Length: 134
Image (cartoon, rainbow, N blue to C red):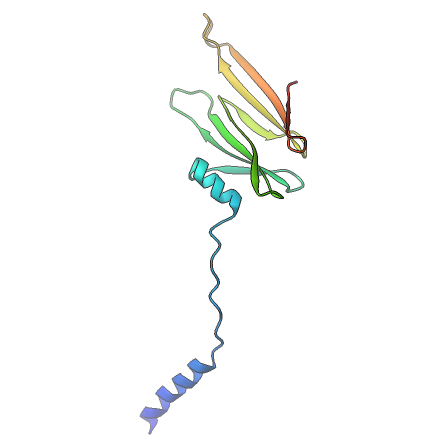
């Protein structure tokens, strides 16, 4: 009789357990999917203070390069889309204010003095979607 009691007890307890529906795992956010498709792994993000926009970027550096090339896009949370993208040779990109980024690109001159650098800077306003130069 004891031999039958254990399997019956197990069946009883198994049927009493709450059945939880299987939740489908999200395949990542739209921004993550876009970043993975454009940059692959090891990308980085910088969020503005309000959290409405993100700079998503990746640095690429060859052994002979002094500075890394930066590829980036700006992702807008509300529209869930890329509103701007660029590539900066030996450059950097960051938030200048809540809604304005600063992008700096450095190019080596091909003149006699190859160590001299030319710097190009612009500001991008994510609200008006316009570029201004200093």
